[in-house]
Length: 447
Image (tube, rainbow, N blue to C red; front, side, top):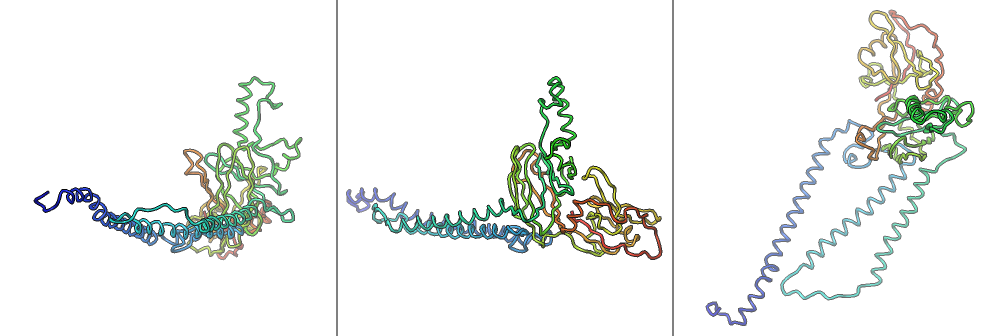
């Protein structure tokens, strides 16, 4: 101590202050520098990832996604009510984004501005500013109150927008692991009763031994997996479902019209699912034992049909849309509405008719050549089917619970529901000729 020229008192003071001075004087600048450098590196890496991902994205993959920076935003909306949902989402997003950024800026400012420094006075407790506290409490309360009222209005128009004066298109959607079931009404435009499964106490089974009754019930459920009430003779509510388009095999496309009010009745056969149409801002849980309802209208711009030349390369891989109004259409009638099918006849190089079925046969160069030989010149193709997904984790196969939604014109949808015989259903298939008159325009569906 004496060798350093310090008195014992000064040396003791230096020993006490030394570690503290080292931490506050030298350590704090180094810590701030490391923090700033880390934040800068994280920002650079995040920005690089965003730019790389945006540059590598192909804007031509899906027209329902906005190009450029729109890929980082909501998908394009095609529903009438979706505009109010998007406006509400944007308002909430930007309010929370601005408040969040300002809060973080203030946080870092106070962390750096009031960090510990040598010789700094100790902080002293103050009560605060009552007026300021009332302001920063009142502003969020007003904002949240307004958002709550607006949200309720948007929700009510989405869920409870029934208008008795407007004829709605009714469709029943039933979720099951891991496909969607879609049931359409018949010509009466009324749906029957579903998810009415037999019980051992029913008159049909009550006289059987319990084990035998369970076996028969299981067998009957295999034949009627959605529990359609088929007591058409005695139950007036069940009779409406006698002409329903009900396919016991799930997974077929959902077909809906544009520019028409749509009412989707929603339920589940087994576990909780979630019916989600991203491009139409439609989303609701499908709960077993409960009936949900969704009301929405698809804009005209959502129509998938587009008239194309038969030589248009967009037709490759797309099935045709054929109904009773399609020129040159033939059909296969069936008492089961879901099994009624329409087809047209092409002609192969040998002069034999080649049937092309609607909504199932994907167009190939060979089929297109057969149709050209039969005289078809133009086809109407659905350029894009929309996606329906399950947004609720419903089991190990949840990833596969996806489907397609085809939006068609009101006229096409009406023909799909009616399932009438084509005007020329009895006509003979066309024959090869040197010059064949075009039978007209067909409709094709893009999967």
